[in-house]
Amino acid sequence: MQGTAIAQPNIALIKYWGKRDIDRNLPAVGSISITLRELHTRMHVELDEALDADVLTVNDEPDENMLPRLSACLDRVAGAGRPRARIASTCNFPIAAGLASSASSFAALTVAAAAAAGKSFDVARLASLAGQASGSAARSLLGGFVELENVGDDIACRSLCDAGDWPLTVVVAITESGPKAVGSTEAMEISRRTSPFYSSWVDQQAEDLDTARAAIATRDFEKLAAIAEHNCLKMHSIMWASRPPMVYWNAATMRCLQTVRQLQGQGKGVFFTIDAGPQVKAVCLPEHAAAVEAALRATAGVVDIMTTGLGEGAHLENQG
Ligand code: 2P0
Image 1 (tube, rainbow, N blue to C red):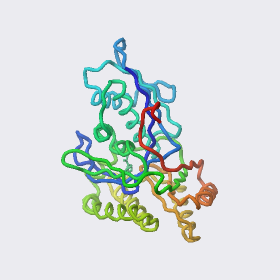
Image 2: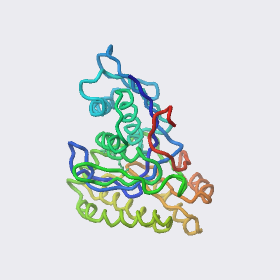
Image 3: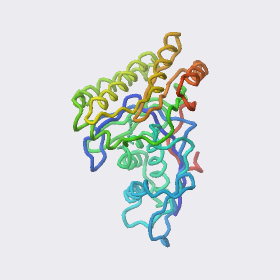
Image 4: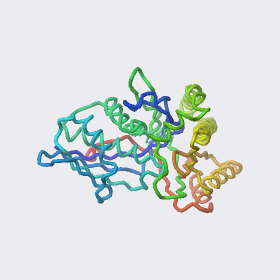
């Protein structure tokens, strides 16, 4: 009655922002992401009839805050009548700071819980269950370049390109390591309700997805760079124009964008993307990763750098 799974976070190049069904946590738009390799969450789930309530530790410390969301995910995977669970999560990167920790956490939890409950779900079902817990988590079930589509009244994820077939590097510039002010779930709803740009965002997403899909199919880095930066800035424009406005950036975030522009001016293959947090992810060609890393490290306000390749989807620990 136990299972341990590892999942890597993913970074969206064409973003998920907004929901069409809050109760079922269905996204308003499709998205395309890359699954990372070196960052990970390890989730251990043990179902135990002797327990009265679920218990959770995150990096070996008891955690009450995240527990209700994790318990709800376990109910969906193992059934509401399941035994209570001992859940232990460990994460080798900052949590809740715009680094997609919820994606790797819920992908790992879904796979570990299914194993603990003796369920042999296929990847499509696991992705759907993970997505109900956290929209971006569905994409971490698969590796490399992943597209999440809205299909009927569910989602479907598919691999567009394996990690090894276009081995890009991601340099993450950490500009602040604390948790974010407004969680993504709440921020998406504020955007949907109040931003004058929200409906244009939803309307234009299919075109951005088409462009990115074509760029990935032809390994066209410049084309992918242009559409990913455009889609990212469009998403942040929605937030900036919301009421109340939501600005996740700090001064160092902006300086990192300037660094990326300078690198591009020097002919380096690199582009930026930013999620619901102040960190800047610079996606680059492997041969330019050292230059990108050095330039971002030298950018004022950058407190740490993490460099990673692209990796595989969520898996049971003993099936790595
Ligand atoms: C993404 N983000 O596509 C976008 C870009 C953040 C910015 O998916 O409400 O934690 O749990 O479904 O998955 C973060 O949102 O939101 C996210 P919920 P989630 O990666």
